Image: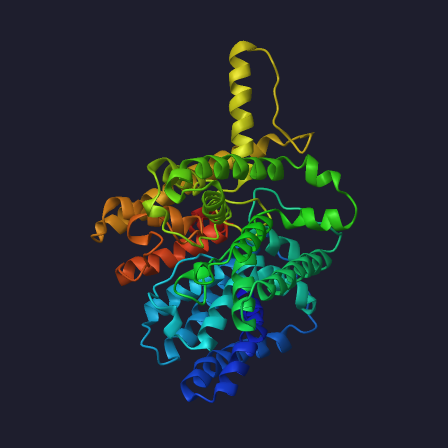
Amino acid sequence: MLLRISALTLGIAVPMMLPAFGMALVSGEFLLIRAFAIPLGITLACALPAFWAYKKTRFQFGQQDGFFLVFLTWIGISLLGAFPYYLAGQGISFTDAVFESACGFATTGASTFSDVERLPYVLLFWRSTTHWFGGMGIILLTVALMPLMGVGGFQLIKAETPGPEKEKITPKITATAKILWLVYCGLTLILFLLYLLGGMSGFDAICHAFTTMATGGVSTKNKGLSFYDSPFIDLISTVFMLLAGLNFNLYVRVLTGTFKDLWHNSEARAYLLIFSIASGLITLSLVQVYGSVGRAARYGVYQTASILSTTGAVITDYAAWPSFAQGILFILMFIGGCSGSTAGGIKVIRHVVLWKQAGNELRRLIYPQGVFSVQLNRKVGRKDVVYGVAGFGFLYLMVIAATTLMTAASGIELSSAFSAAISVTGNIGVGFGVIGPCGTYGAFPDHIKWIFSLVMIAGRLELWTVFVLFSPEYWRR
């Protein structure tokens, strides 16, 4: 039953591919048309029978079922998304095609392409589309647009949405999903119009709007946004990367008039504080490099927002920066954006919880009989959240360690292997060494690219959703 429901869920690939398929038809190139027609045919052949079989059936999933269904969906959608790259006649291997597809849906700003401008517009648009849909989440979109599935949606959202705590904005999860997608679409539209105002073409504006809001970071230009050399575009991109890294539930609350929720939100305040301190320190260290505070701020603030929000976009060679500035960017790679955002990483809320718990442990040394709790959003937090955060942090570091060792064993230099492991686990994309601002993932062996693809999907799904499936207790239930 879960396999059939998974096939139905994959039907969401049809509306994803239709715009790119339409562009391929207009281009008249047979290889591009075939590249999208085949995965569309496969998707329809799987989804339509499942839809008719369960059209009048309602299912209520438990959380364990949600884990399995979400994992199957993300694996399936990543494999389907690889076909356009592989069949487009551009000499892209199947391994690289899967890697690019996984990067897209996991919103990782990584790529094996050294020259994206040689690719057809259709593939560039598909690349941006996968980032945009992956940003808010395939399952979230499915729950929003396919209530006829009759699936208990909240269990799917819990398994897919990033962050230690999940919440409903409305009593019905389908209504919550629709509201979040409306906010996401609204912000994307505003960003698209601002990019047009900044001088981008319509095609470049929509592609960059997709990847910026999804915190994906890929571009239609080899030089990224630096191709335009526009302070206005850089500023707009910086602002919207930060906005995309905030919890989208906060936007809904602001739109409904509850502004105090934004100010009282512990995670949002910490997120903006971290950004302010990091960008300020980096700017000060770059004044001598760029010769003026204005230019130092332009590049320093942009790269800070890019790494913190896990967008991974680059407008300057930060590998040539002073070690102090690079060190701050490296630390930001371990932080990430807010829970409930399109950003990846450990998430700011987990750092807030651990910071507060560390303070409590210090107080307990002074007052052994005292009772201390972690307060979030001016409320006492659940004690099990601290345990969950600690467990997640340990698992996160173990994934990085294992990925580093496997990458280094393939012959990659250790610092580059470590940087790549942090980058793919946190869905950042760029890093240091081989994957620095001027590098790509093309030099990695094929088997490492497959490992990276799985790690990116696991990181996008907050690790637990994937690793619980490897637990013997899960299959003995």
